[in-house]
Every structure is written in structure tokens, then in C-alpha cells.
Image 1 (spheres, rainbow, N blue to C red):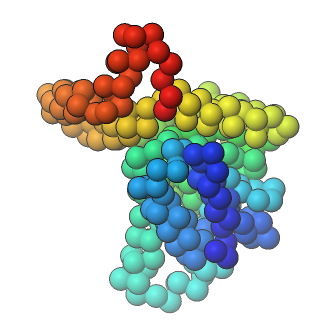
Image 2: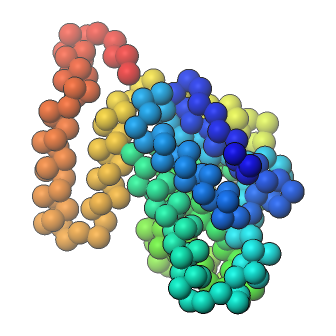
Image 3: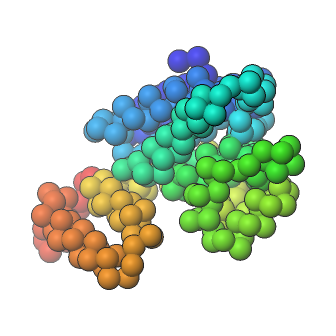
Length: 257
């Protein structure tokens, strides 16, 4: 790997963006490497939680503008293919069957903010800034827009996307863009606490089914959503995790996930 560092330990896949000299901008090779390691961990029983973090002062500055400039002479089809490359990464993380935590130690801008947005949990250092600045350089926050509206609603998303302004962690936490702001000294500890809780206290199969249901019901009618919920409820009852959990609860035994 050239642009990321991959480590699996204690049921965690830790993916570290390692392009600090470019503020971890989303070069296509970095995207390819992330897609590879995340995809490979789908069926890896040694991975129960994914943590995405970064080296350097910035979490991710978004698209690699030098690379985008090279693409300006491309055909529409070539640009579409390149856009789909990043879309596939965002969709992979958003629909990933295991919890994904973004540990944001520095600014997350444009596509970098989108990368954090598609994660299930976002913990950030208090000095970090967030924003979608594409409109300030004549670009469009196209793919990240889809996920942002789902996460914080149309009104809040419009304010961020159309203004292009950066917000601090206090505002980001207030509108639901991030889940917790931490001091830079305690960020590692807070993320470790969250990861430990998910790994030790929760059924992996239950989190998988719950996450899939969260993502799949949002565009359904109420009737279709409730039908999907009933089906998931029935599926969950047949899982070994559910049988184990109910047996342990009834017999007052500890559950070891």
C-alpha cells in the first residue's frame, strides 16, 4: 500500500490515510487502496469494527485538485468512470455490514467531509473544521450531497452545501454531522472506548442486520418499510447470535461476543 496503512488487531480494521504532505487528498490510487482493504474485511471474522483515521494535521482535504486539473481534457465518459470510482468507495463504506468509525483529528473538507459523513460514527478533535467548499472553486458537491441529506436533512445540508462555509465541531455536533467532539488528547481514548463497547457488548450479526435496515428503509413507503422491518425481525430470530443472547439472558449467563 502506498497511500494508506492497514492494520488488523483486537477485532478492529484500522485504515490510516497516509498522504499527509497532500493533506490526505483523495487521489484515485488512495481510493483504490481503501476499496481493496475495506472490501476484503467484509468476510473477515477477525474484523468487527472499522476505524478510519489519518496521518498529519488534516483528516482529508477532499479531491486531489491537481489530479482533477489533469482530467479537464477528458471525455464525459472518462470523467464519469473516475467519478464512479469515488462513488463506489462511499457506497462501500455506507453499506458496509460492520460499524465504521471516523476518527477525525484535523480538518475534513469537501470529499474528505463526505468520507466522514458516510461513516456510522464520527468522533472529532475539537480543533477540526468541517465543510463542503466545492461551490467556492466552481465544482459541485455531487456524491457527498446524497449522503449528507440523509444524515442531517435537506435544510441543514443546503446551508452547508450552498454556502461552502466551514463549521467547527460545536456546530457540527449540534446539527448531527458528527457524534462527539473530543480534545485532541482524548480522541484516541474516546474512539477506543467506543470500539471496545461495540466489539464486546454487541452481536455482530445484530449490528449487521440493524445497519442494513437503517440504510434500506429510508426511501420506502411506510407500508413497505414496516414489511421490511417485519422480515428482518423474523430473520433475526433465526440467527445463532439471537439464540445465544436469549439463552444467556434467561439463564443469567454472561454473553461473550
